[in-house]
Image (cartoon, rainbow, N blue to C red; front, side, top):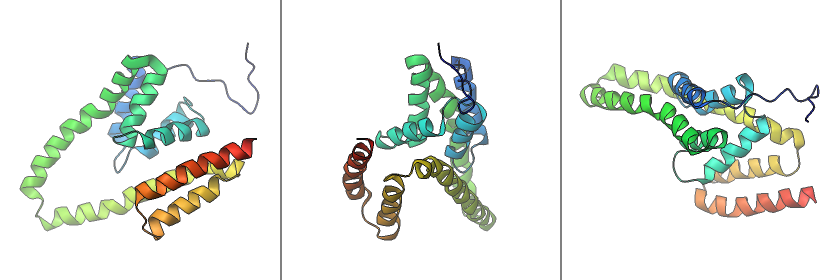
Length: 189
């Protein structure tokens, strides 16, 4: 029998197949410029299906899987909640609308992509999308800074290596990943 304390809210019920489909469909419909901010907000803040740390851990796993991170997250989360059929429900909810929208967008862009007004609109949308990513990174970093340890240093070192030094991602990950794991293991001893 588990007790709920003031510091930990009661666990949310496990979402059904339909709830998984609708949640990821909603993320897709509202997630212009990137769906990670919307996914995190829904799962952590609204539905409370995951804690901040659980979301970060799940997303970190999905970073290392081949394919788009957020699509991986849909599959892994759906599978975690309802098994293989849950993965399919989440995946379909996440990808069915964008698939058809991108087909339509490609046809429109092929016909109107050279129009100056279209280029200006696309140029104006880019900063908003970047702002969503920066805000999400800040929210995802908060749990790391709360428990401190080596995580903030690994985060800053990785950002500097890739963003400032322009070192190849593969090289940085080959160095940072085992270093980060070793530091986390050493801190918990």
